[in-house]
Length: 622
Image 1 (cartoon, one colour):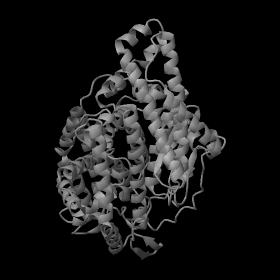
Image 2 (image 1 turned 180 degrees about the horizontal axis):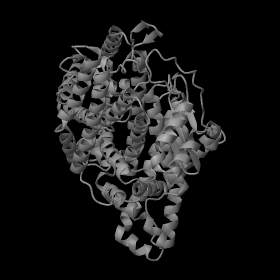
Image 3 (image 1 turned 30 degrees about the horizontal axis):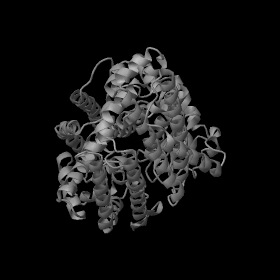
Image 4 (image 1 turned 60 degrees about the vertical axis):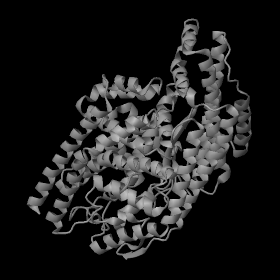
C-alpha cells in the first residue's frame, strides 16, 4: 500500500530466517455462504427484486411525520438487503478473479446502494433539515436521521439526475473493475527471476519476504534487483492501465461538477483537497526524522555486520543469531488475543469468535490460486461478520498483521450490527475506519516487543512497530503526494508514459528517503501501487488513519480505562455524527490535523530513541 518504504517495511516485518523450518501447510477455511443466501439461484432472484425496488423507490418523501418515518424505515430495510447482496457477491468474486458474473453483480449492488441513498437524500433535502427537526418533535424516531439530512445537503451541488447517474454507474464502475482485473493478470504474468537457495528455488516476487532474510548478501541483492527488473519489463503496460484509470476518474469527476478527481474522491471521504495538501506538507516538513531513523538502521547494520556500503536489502536481515518463528494461523490467533487485551475483554471475545474455525467466519487459503483482493472484512445486517484473506502463505509476520487489521474491520462491523446501527451509518469516512484497524497492528507489534526478554527480539519487534508507524505516516505521505501529482500531471499533459511516472516517483522519494540516490530502480515503485488501480485515490486515507491510530495508541497507553470505554462506545454506535464530533467524544477535546502531526512525531521520536538504546546494548555485547 505504500512506496519503496512500504516494500522495505513489509520485507523487514517478514517472519523467520531461512534457518527456521516452514510451518505445516496452512489449512483452508471458508465462510459459510448459506448464511447470506441458501443458494446462488435464490440470491440472484432476490437481487433482481431488490434492483426493481430501488428503481421504483420514490425520491419524494411524504409530509406526514408517521409516513415519513415509515418511508425511511423502508429505505433502511432495502439498503440492508443490498448490503447483504454486496457482501455475498464480493466474497464469491474474490474467490475467483475470473468470475465476472459475480464481480459485475457486485458493482451493480454498489451502484444500487448509491442510487437508493441518492433518492433518500433528494427526499430529505426537499423536506429540509429544519422541517425534519420539527417533525421529529412529533415522531422522536426521526431524530436519528438528522445527520443523514445534513449529509444530503452537503452532496447537493454534485448530484446528477437519476437517469444520468445510472448511466455513469453502468459504465464507469465496470470499466474500473476491468482495469483492475487486467492489472492483476499483468502482475501475475510478469516474469520474475527464480533463485536457487538453501530453501529451494524461490520466486523473486512471490517469495520476497523469505529471500530478504537470506544470510547470503548476494542472494538478497539479486532478489531485490530481480523484482525491479521484472516490474520494469512490463512498465509500459502498467503505465497504460494507470493512465487509463486516471483519465476515466477525471471525466467522472467533471460530470459530477468537481474540478478534478482528487477533489471529488476526497470530498466523498469527508476531506478537502486544501487540507489534504496541507497535511502532506506538514508530514514532509518532518522528513528528516524519517531519514534519521533510516540512518540509525544503517549504522546498526554496519556495527553488527561490518558492512561499509549498507543498502536497503541489508536492512531486512534479522540480528545474527536471532530467528523469528513463522506463525501458524493458530499461533497468530493466540498472539492477536493477547495483543488486543488493552481494548477490553468484550473486544477480545469478539475476536476469538471471529477466528474460531468452527464458526465458519474466516475465508483463508494457503495458496493464492485465483483468489484476489488481498484481505478484507465483510459485514451486513443480520449476518455474522467475516474475514477474507487471499492467502496466509508461509506464516511471515506480515500475514499476522493482515489478520489483526482486517479482523479489526470485521469486529467493528459486528459490534455495529449487534447494536442495531442503521445501515445508513455503518460506513463512515474511510480514514476513520482504517484507523481502528491500524490500531490493532500497533498493538500486535507492541505486545510482541514488550513480551520479549532478549534485546535482539526487542529490537526486531520494536523496529516492526516503528516501521509500521513510519509506513502509515511517511509512506502514506509519499503515496498521497505521488497519486495526487500523477492526476495533476496526466491531466496537465506532463505525464504521458512510464518514463514520466518514473521521474515523478523518484523526485518524491528523494524528499523522504536516503535510498533513491543509491538505488534508482526505486523509480519503478509506482507500478506496484495496486491500490491506485483497485481503489483510486484511497491511499491518502492511510495518512489520516495513521495519524489517528498513533494518537489512539498513545491515549490507550496513557489513559487505558477511560480510552477503552470511550472506544468501545464509539465502535458500537457507528458514524451517526460528523467525524470531528465523534473524535471530540473519543478524546474529550478537539484536535487539529497539525496537532495530530506534531503529536505523532513526538510519539515516533520517543520510540526511535528507545530502539537506539537497544541497538547500543546489542552492539556492546556483539
